Length: 118
Length: 111
Image (cartoon, rainbow over all chains, first blue to last red; front, top):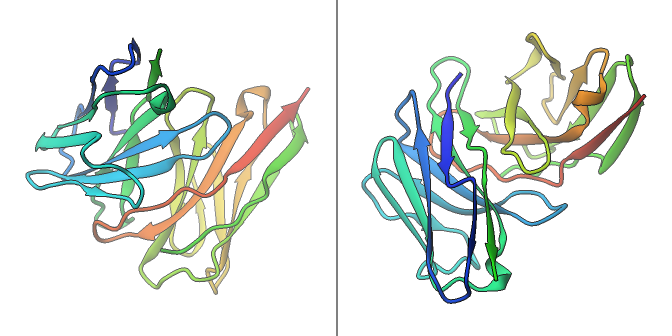
């Protein structure tokens, strides 16, 4: 099946610094990628939808100036958490959509990135 | 977006068949139903997807009644390694519509 990677798998940063997380589709092209955030014992919360070559669409309540998303190619999307604070500590997961033909779309998820802000 | 409702948690003994039902009363005509499995600190993993009737693959079956307002994920003979959270998602099968995760069902397999 389609493989999505994320880098780094975990990161610890100091409050006030910025962190970039990469999401790559390894063996397919993804015109659409999604970024999710998941707090402990909670479900995934969609942060934004990223289409290649255009600006990301952010969900209500997600600050676009704080969570910068760039989808410059069909295989790479990046999420930059700017001026990170402890409350931004979370598990960040990306997914890439594979447009189906007969059976519909499938989303393939990356392994996630654990961000801890101290 | 079609909202989904699932039981918060379920317990099952090893070797039993587990059925997890998801309600999606306002599913749209072109929506597909997809189930994912998630282990702690990992990204969700695709299990199965269907549109109507029954779909079966090597790990699960998906039953969808004619009105498509619900679906049931069936896991045959579960093992301890099936302990995970299972999410039912409903979304557009032909475009860029986003899908939203519900609460999921925490399945605990007991030895």
